Length: 119
Image (cartoon, rainbow, N blue to C red; front, top):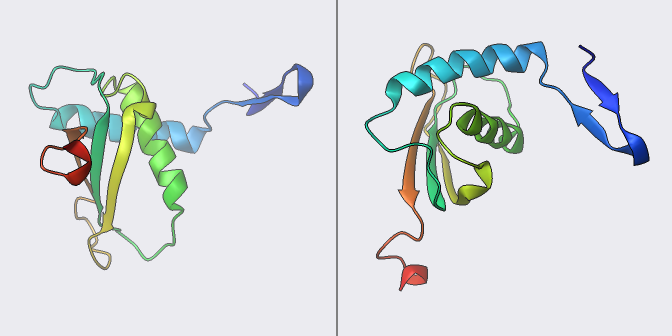
């Protein structure tokens, strides 16, 4: 399959490349193992809290990582739609640590009780 195909009026539809599919499949296994007895998919707006611990010294694109996570959540049927992530907390957990868990994710129903915007 070609990596992209042209549509009328200049629209481009991109298929996932092989490297992304390999990452998605490996990450999906980890994500599905880590799921608790939460009714899925999540169908309400959520606050996503992500703590990222890099495993190397490469510079990564935050927007690209968030986009990949949104696609992963839909692929694994964790979120009905990644547009349900309406608020985000993203933090870097420090310098790289080889062979450590690299991402911790928590979902909270939005708005979070106790916050000024929730009252």
